[in-house]
Length: 310
Length: 320
Image: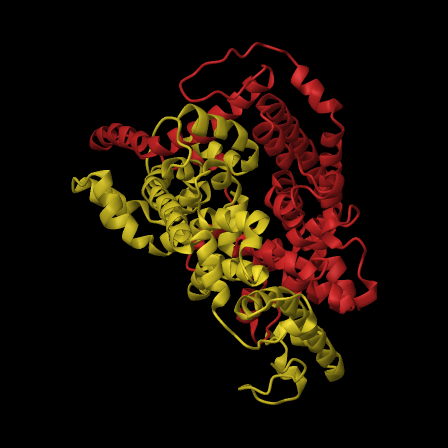
């Protein structure tokens, strides 16, 4: 990608200033010194590109390293050569990728389903229905997002694994993440925007709340549902500590956990351990990255903003 | 940008209770009673979830922390005698605990300024009309959405004794190497987390930059302020609320650190150089079977987070 050349694109080539923002107010304010503009643009692209390299290089290295026959740390190994899928077979032999992926999938889908069903119900109630304690529930929602979750892992571990006997069990894995509070908040904010009159009319026609939610509110909330799904997916798919505590049986471990155990004590069992590790990392990263790329426009700053402010 | 207009409005806790009271007439009030029940019903699963996953465990931690507590097999029972504050005394006299908190302090000292500076510079550069904007945004966001475990694997490879970075540095490579060096282990974790989370904060600052008035830049420009001056006198104060958020988020991340010290520096680094409080809770509580000690440590950690967050908030919001 050409970084320093100023925009040889569609716009009219009136010098480097063509690259500059169009708002008229701005133009009157800044003296049109062409060289200054160019330098600013060059610096901007240099900074952004440098950043992009720092962010993308590890991913590139991960992919190349996972495909090489022997993966070493020397500089030549950054260049793809003699590519093979051997590392993927090796890591599959050591931790049974299919089974781990299935466990990750069950955990993630369980969380997604609970969040969608119960989160939409709660979000709708918080936005459109009157009931006692509504303020308290909403205040707890905001509070909960400030609690560092890991701090609760010990008592949760005692309760879930020791008292309820849910170790090595999907329910135990899903429980702490079952309803994502950020998603509930997102749903509430969305339902709050829908016009009250719409619901009043439906109620006068005798429709029940569940029917109103299902037939009127939910179809309109599709973008909110998609955003919430994407936000919710990342959490359980990438989560390490909780499933690490809950699952001792290798057959029940999600990929993040089995890959971590490969990282800390199984590497000696394969011929090209680093390659195998990177292959596992690629498999773990791929679904979240793929979803992100496909739905990129839905990961917007305002969504994140609202999630955090919540 | 998004078809979610709702997301822009900041929530105020008060608004939930006020507003939206329908006029109480005959049919409407009968309807109100109905929705009262329905509303409570709809929200019940979520309330149960909050109780089971947040409220009960929090109270339970407090309870465990003042008792002598043992793990028992399911179905069996062991007495848990009241021991007052003795678990807390153990926590405060354990040198490793002190080290773990010191490590968090090191983490914050590196992570916070680095995050604020880099995220702000990248966001400011992204905020202009530029080509490949979507590409850059995606590139910065990629580590944030990728699993820690996967990224740790790559970093171990990049920064290992025989890794890419050391080959690049040749004789300038640190000895002992990055992740097994007691002076570098914690800074490495801070840099790793900064790198992983940065995209999130770039997005946050991008959103905040939309709210900085164009006329402010104009005025500054008329007054003869250069780009750099404008950055410091207009942009930086303009995004102060976002900076507060960054700081608080960094503190929570620091308090939550587990996978990075556990995996990146092999269980807490040489001589606990990168042990974190949560890692210590895991080691003491679950590996070594002292959940009471771990619970007390958890309570201390929460208190620590609250105090530091409040202090940071005071500091970053000063002058507002």
